[in-house]
Image (cartoon, rainbow, N blue to C red):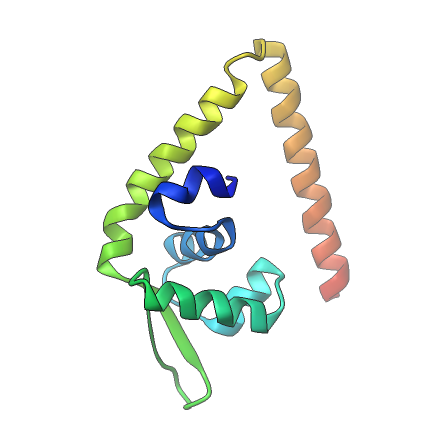
Length: 126
């Protein structure tokens, strides 16, 4: 989703990526987040700090003092369904002018891109 669709929630797409990740997988370490999202650690850390300051997430110490566990705040848990609904509305609006055939083609192409992206990550980590 682009930033304009998230503007009413005062979020950027990079912040939404982290929130969505936490929604899907539950509490994670900061390292697990940046590895999963394939984003530089300092970038994720800055984004997490902003999310914490604005009340979207909570951080706590992990097993050792260097490890930080990140989880959704109650506020985020309550707001995420509303955000997901807005994303769904935006997606439906964007594809509403496409025929069924075009929508199927788009879906197939997006899946192909997703597979290619996964393969690149596997190669980079292997």
